Image: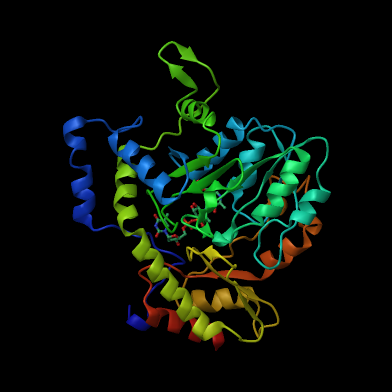
Length: 367
Ligand code: T4K
């Protein structure tokens, strides 16, 4: 394949130097301690809590299990107000806990839950709000907190995209009662598969620890109906190595995003993500909204595909249009989310993406 035709996927996992990973896992051959909260797990938990500026953080085998167990640990029931503009995991975590999702619309500015729409949907059955920091954009955290306080609701953030995001120096995962993180291979920071829950009340430490280990409290007591969601030592090893390099990786992503902006900013019919005041970004995704451009979103996606370039419609379809939910819900009730889902395309973005490739991707879009 010629360089002009080299295949580029929407993202590519960051890999630490091979020798570093080999060095990190070498002690496992002596200890033979591979999972169930081993030494690497403990070390990663400490280091991540520090990096993310949270007092309390527990690791999980993946982000989805972390979210499901956070819903369970917070004791949510009845109705949970959430967004349809997200990955399947967000709503599934609510439904798999026996709660009813209620979909509120999003803000056009940043794709996150619109607090005004949330407030309209609160009933006596509502127990929580589950917003998503979509693409690493911080939700309207202060307004949501106000609403939650007024109506005695819990707030659980899906912060799968928000690794390292901060507002005026405060870690994004410290907002709300708890926040879930995903460390999936496709994320800014990864542990192959992996996730975490950050939370404010230390009382959740034991329940969350028990939930991810079958609800077992000690050898003779099983207090909760838990599952198995423990991160293993190989995942933790990858996490420890990747943590050493994550700042450089984010800086490289910043340069990629900047290059996209040089080409695409101000082009009629294209809307780019805008920075949020006081927010330290992680450059997780590069979404572009095609509205009034000479080609529509699907035509641009097809044109890129024809040149071997992958892009994704994160998030289309909306969750309220999924086969498993559409008999009870409809995207007609969330018109802003519908508008965005029909027009947005996330372009290739990863630390090792060459700036010349960004030039080529933009040439294809603009031609
Ligand atoms: N909440 C939100 C808001 C989320 O976005 C997610 C996950 C979750 C919750 C749940 O967290 P986890 O349980 O996953 O930790 C991907 C990811 O699998 C998923 O983690 C992510 N969100 C979602 C937005 O994207 P797919 O089905 O689009 O991934 P896939 O396999 O098509 O991969 C996309 C590209 O990534 C590939 O074209 C190449 C690259 N890639 C992929 C893999 C698997 C790599 O470079 N290395 C790899 O190992 O879901």
